[in-house]
Image (cartoon, rainbow, N blue to C red; front, side, top):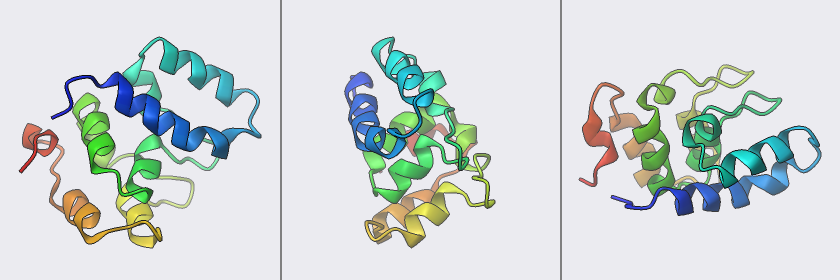
Length: 120
């Protein structure tokens, strides 16, 4: 498992920051969140489409970052639907970056198990 959770979250933020550039309110708020290492606030953030960072990480097939997010807030696996009612597993399934390993990780993850945050 990742010992320092700050770097993966900062890496994820760098990956999604450009997607949010047009939102002049959201970007400064989340920049501050990342600099304060406020993992809870960052992982529960939603953009104007209802997408969470979990959706973005799933769409990028980044299992390592998903583990960090889900360790912080396991219930996000099943609750963060976007404005179209899609879960992070849907983002992984339709993404050109989607992999069978990512889909398997999301299908097998159980929000009541802490084992989802540790390598198999």
